[in-house]
Amino acid sequence: MAEELPSNPRGLKAVVIILGIILLGMLAAVVYGVIVKMGGKGGEIAATVAVKPGEQVVDMAGTGDRLVLRLRNAQGPSG
Image (spheres, rainbow, N blue to C red):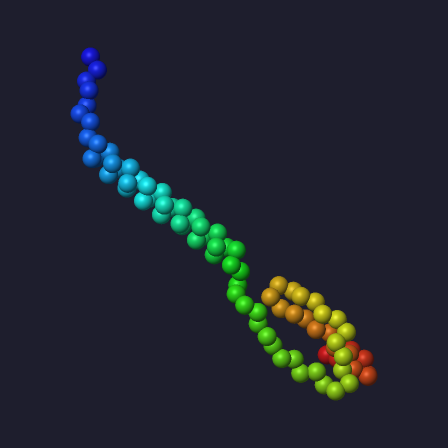
């Protein structure tokens, strides 16, 4: 009753190789995605701030991708 299909080892070998290549490609895509996510934005950014003579930095606060400085001079807070 059960009809036996002819075995074709060459065809099965091709299927296994193709599926292996697809699996490796998917793994490479996942690894690339993890590296991109963990990479961040890149290097540091340097900026120059002109502080007048007699002024001093009173406070620093980081907000998102910015740095807020509060300065004070002899007359009081600088605006």
